[in-house]
Length: 151
Image (cartoon, rainbow, N blue to C red):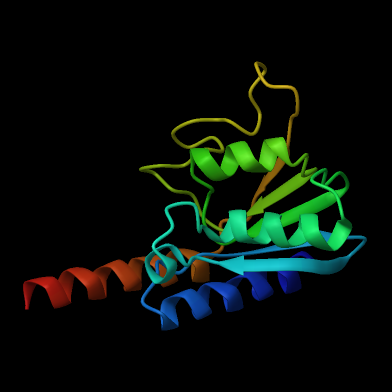
């Protein structure tokens, strides 16, 4: 099951890539069913909060009719930033499955650890999947960006 949900998050990331957005995708699952999804739209809609995770959380809250996403799991292709990690904690998501880490801005253990902070009122069970496809998708995207900028 884990692989199929991550596969859907990767499909969401590919949608972002097709719009020349940083290819990050997320899905939210409740009772083994995808209830929400999202992909980065920051550049497309000029909204600094339009990260895949935030979009998916907003959609899930609408679907459930509550901001409390207790019992929900999120699958995301890239380790959430501090903003998204905070939103994951605030929304009470139970489990977070991460495709690859973010060594520059990760908010779930790599740089900061918002999701498992003893100072906050909710603790998220984080599972690292270390998916090669998630890593390669980002590496290729940024390689192309640098190449096009230089050439």
